[in-house]
Image 1 (spheres, rainbow, N blue to C red):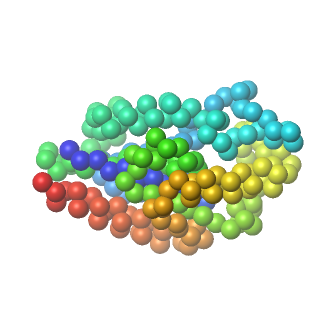
Image 2 (cartoon, rainbow, N blue to C red; image 1 turned 180 degrees about the vertical axis):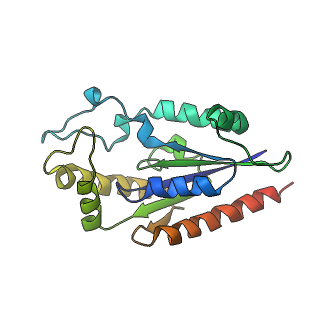
Image 3 (cartoon, one colour; image 1 turned 45 degrees about the vertical axis):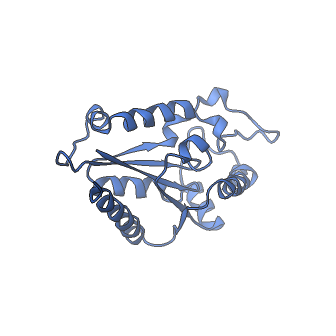
Length: 200
């Protein structure tokens, strides 16, 4: 049995979830663990001096719970897939199980980042990001000025921290077509799966 951990990171509304879901549909024996599923309750999220909730930091997330779920997959990917009601599609002796880890801060958390075999980061320009963010409804909803006053400055800070920690991230232009981006990443991952299957 062999495993492959693929990180799909990126800024808010950059296309992370779409990419991850599409990869999952194409890749046998794969599953997704998404960072957004591990946010702490709104009542415990810190608030800054402007009244903005501090969601875009690691302290807003139950990273311990996320790591526990990832460790469950690493321990026995086949059983993990079965527990998630996901079907395996491989032959005994040729198993390559793929975990797609998706999130906006997955490369900023050292213990998680160290588990990644492949890293991709989707980025889009400020104006596109702001437009996409403004068209979505969040719970709780974004306060007026939240994007410029918190989301974008925090993204720039998180990105710098990420780049200081990690060097082998493939940056992807989120303005390209979803199909082209998917084909590129899928091609990379498929080559790596074939390489793993060819190893003794």
